[in-house]
Amino acid sequence: MPEGHTIHRLARRLGETLGGRPVSASSPQGRFEGGAAAIDGRTLLRAEAWGKYLFCDFGTGMALHVHLGLIGKFRTAAHPPEEPTGAIRLRLVGEGTTWDLSGPTRCELVPPDEQDRIVSRLGPDPLRRDADPAAARDRLARTERPIAATLLDQSIIAGIGNVYRAELLFLCGIHPARASSAVSDDEFDAIWSETVRLMRIGERSGRITTTDPAEIGRPRSRMRREDRLYVYHRDHCRRCGTPLRTDRIGGRPITHCPSCQPAGRRRRRALSR
Ligand SMILES: [Zn+2]
Image 1 (cartoon, rainbow, N blue to C red):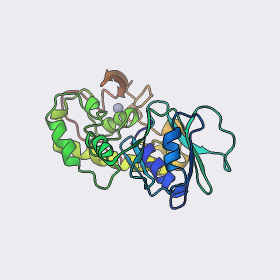
Image 2: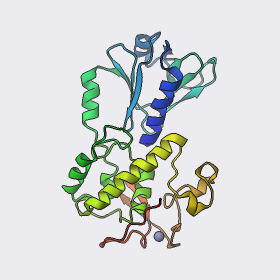
Image 3: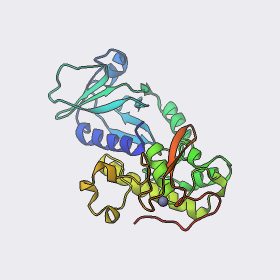
C-alpha cells in the first residue's frame, strides 16, 4: 500500500500538471460516470493529501475523494490520451498531461462535512504544515499497544506504512514490541522528527530512502535499490551485521535488529544525520 509521501507527491503533481485550467474528466470503465460528469470541464482548484487520503477540489461544492488502498494506481498516461487499457475508473485530461486512476478502494464525490468526518478520524500528518504532534504523543502515552502497532494506526499518526515504521524504529533504536506508553517524550520527538525528515525525502524523490548517503558512500539519487533501507526486507543489520528478526506486530511483519533495537531497556539513539 502506498504510504503518505506517495499521496502527498500525487497531490502536488496533480496540482502542478492540472491546476488552473479546465480538466476533462471521464470514467472509461463506467463505474464513476456520474462523478466524472460532475467535474468534467471544471478547474482543479486544489489537491491535498491527508495521510493516505487524497482530496481534489474542483469548485463543485463536493470534493473528489480517492483512497488507493492496496492495489490502486493514479498515474500519468500517454498524452494526448490514447484508447484506455484496463479498468480506468477515472481519467483526467489537462492541457499537457493525462492521469488515469485504476483500482482505488474509494473514488467518490463527498460533501464538506463528509471530508471533515474522514479527516477527523485521522491523526496528525507529518507532511502537513498544520500537523500537531502533541495529539499523537498523548495518544501513545495512554496505550500499552506495541509501538510498531500504533505507528501503523492512521488515527494516531496519518501516513506511516509498513516500510517507514520498520525503518523509523530502527533509526530510533526502539524495539517494535515496546509498549507505546513506555516510549519517552524524547524518543517520541525523535520518531516524529525522523518521520517528517524521511517522508519529505520520499515525497521529493517518489521513493523511500532512509539510509544516510555518508554511510552508503553515494548520494540518494545514485543509490542502488538495495542500499536504500536499513532493515526492511533485509537479512542482516546494515550497521552491526547481526541477523535481523521478523515478528508480526499490528497485523503486519516487521523486521528489526535485536542488537540495535534491544528489548526492555532504552538505548542511546543512533539517528543518522
Ligand atoms: Zn544492528
